[in-house]
Image (cartoon, rainbow, N blue to C red; front, side, top):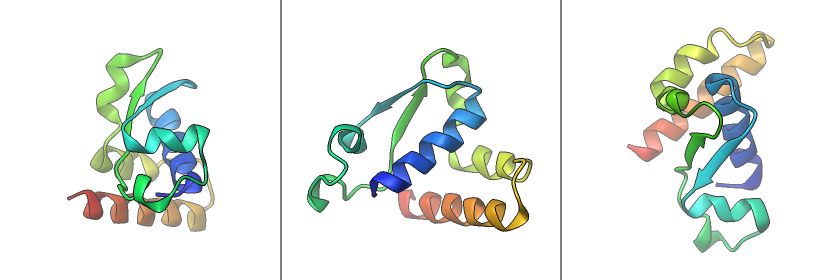
Length: 95
């Protein structure tokens, strides 16, 4: 995962959870402080995210829910398709 991919996941998670602050756990959290971390430290494509101010919404942040919510994002169709494609790729890679 790259810093750009992490930032994208954070934006989508903020939208889905209705929160502007998130807690990032796991290996990918290192990208916050070290965006150019060695590839061995950012090999995982999974990122663990929890809503800070709305912890009850944390369950909304998963691949299937994100795909459903992506359909309703107020963005151009081309951007929405790119988001949906990224979510699908991520979900497939995570397994």
